Image 1 (cartoon, rainbow, N blue to C red):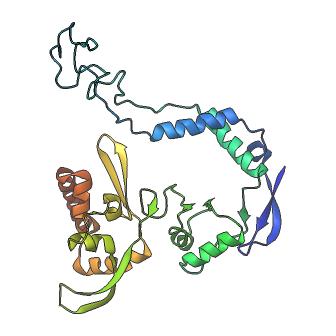
Image 2 (image 1 turned 90 degrees about the vertical axis):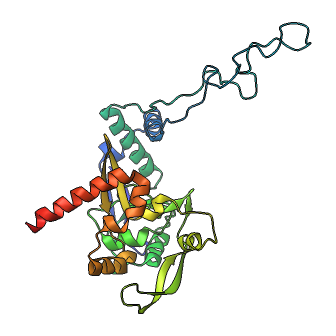
Image 3 (image 1 turned 60 degrees about the vertical axis):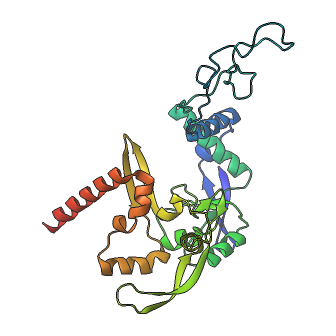
Length: 303
């Protein structure tokens, strides 16, 4: 049986744990792991690339010049591949790159990967992972104590304080496998500023409001960079179920506390608050249908 040290949050060993050899102690099959990685990467490809062939390029309906007497190589059309602006030979077209692996193969790949991690000493077991409050600094301290720079944290159940404390660390992924920070081109995009604002309701001043600097600069005309739609919808998570069916989940974040309180005071649902970003993402027709469904559900609840 494979044994792994059990650490506490301070990084000290407090015991050992025996792992099942059927999962963590098999002989690693590198070929199967390679297949699993290739399948995962292939399934992430959109396959939307499209280049024109010589039959699709505009122009070139006639011979550009006579066959003989010019001193140049004979040419039949300016759409030929050797011409600048001509068609592409065997041009890539939209296609589906995904492929299927058998369940037993995927299971063997996972077992091989876990066994490799155990052999390399890269699986760390904690006796507990609990935080009394949401504090990114404390989570970073815990990761430093166990000498872990890049981690996938797997927990038995959900611990909101741990998840919220880890979400601002770029090298940590959450239980849903999403990067826990909003990113643009692989970069952390949390740029905020603080400013006193006037309440549009009664006109009193709201001190020290946290604002997005990118959004403020764009609205004031100081920048042409418009923040991406994924940032505007964060922490809204939309899932595509196919057949033009989407599901929306609102993942509450502590920074949204004041916005939620104000929304409850104004009786403003999340889908109305995010009308602009949702229309930009899914279109006006989709948003109108969402409003109809939401209003029907609210009416049913009142009845």
